[in-house]
Length: 130
Image 1 (tube, rainbow, N blue to C red):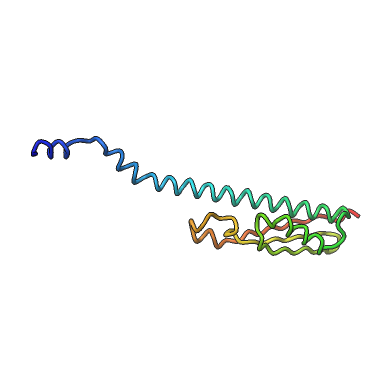
Image 2 (image 1 turned 90 degrees about the horizontal axis):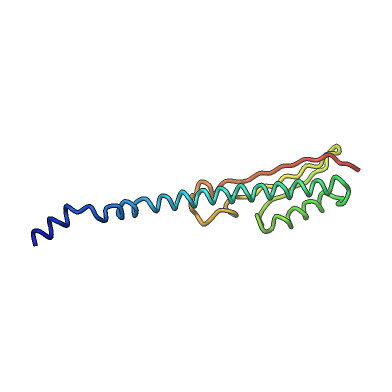
């Protein structure tokens, strides 16, 4: 029995398994954070493109009012940020659209509270062409 106990204490086999069990949750958490930030940036770029397209459509005369443009933007953003606030103003021949939404609409469930409370603000301007 003494030999068995001595061999068990002096053996290095399995020590990598314990270290792996300690580090794997850290690596998984970092990977999840990288994926979350990537998704947030991707969705922000998509939302910015939607706002630019809406302003371009209004500035070329295919839409006639700011209300139509706001409805267009809200409709396109429904899959990204359903609670987004949208305002469009036409002032001195310049169309300005502003969109604001919470990151929590895009974030994987409660990974990090400080990031969940962030807001994304997007603004785009175009000159009226008609």
